Length: 284
Ligand SMILES: NC(=O)c1ccc[n+]([C@@H]2O[C@H](COP(=O)([O-])OP(=O)(O)OC[C@H]3O[C@@H](n4cnc5c(N)ncnc54)[C@H](OP(=O)(O)O)[C@@H]3O)[C@@H](O)[C@H]2O)c1
View 1: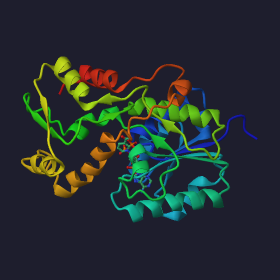
View 2: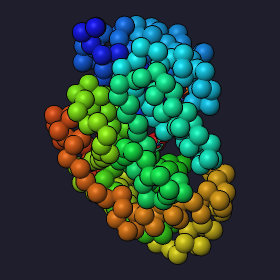
View 3: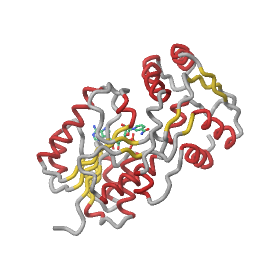
């Protein structure tokens, strides 16, 4: 029996998976006890340079899951971001079924907290929830740094307990190392909920911009954002986000859990501290 359990981290090329991987390595888990995966063979050299094993793994391909899971004791798998709900359910079921076949001792699955409030169809709310990424604030606001006087059209001044993706990854790695949450749904969130208007204040203070929010009805929100959208996002995208904003408005993203602080051993950065830090690194 090796001194350390063996870990497999999916999505190791992604923001969350990479933060998990670097935390495990910084916490003296031997690289030889870790397998990092990607759907792309081109990711092998960068991951192998860290000393970890590399496995080509695709949730759509059960054979790759069987090959990679042999001998794994602790598996972390991240939700995929495909908009096709049926495909995503199948992908996640493939992972769980392969983990059962390989008798993986412990499986930790992470999904976006909004999955639990119906944005992805609602049924079968995911088993573990991660706070809304602070890092995604430009997407939520539909803020484009190109216009210093942009008016943001939003359906509500919702609040969320945003958390930095890097800190979510760090806390998830610590949860994986610690164990003890078997068969539980846990939430990792920032330490308090903050409102969109507070984030806009931080953008203006930190970057000298003069952006403002105009609150509009749902249809108007879709119309104004589709109009000349720099990213070319269409009506369907924004109508999906109306559901999300409804959840924001109802406070469904504002729950706070202290588990993240406990795992990190320090207070995580709240949404405003996170946005300030990101903009201080790069105001554009
Ligand atoms: N909390 C939030 O606010 C928030 C916001 C956005 C997304 N999310 C969720 O969090 C998830 C991961 O977050 P992230 O920030 O790490 O995303 P990310 O940086 O986009 O990385 C996604 C990872 O998923 C892997 N992946 C994609 N399809 C796969 C498949 N079929 N089989 C195996 N692996 C696959 C990718 O691997 P390769 O490309 O290397 O193959 C990549 O490493 C997202 O997928 C999304 O569900 C959360």
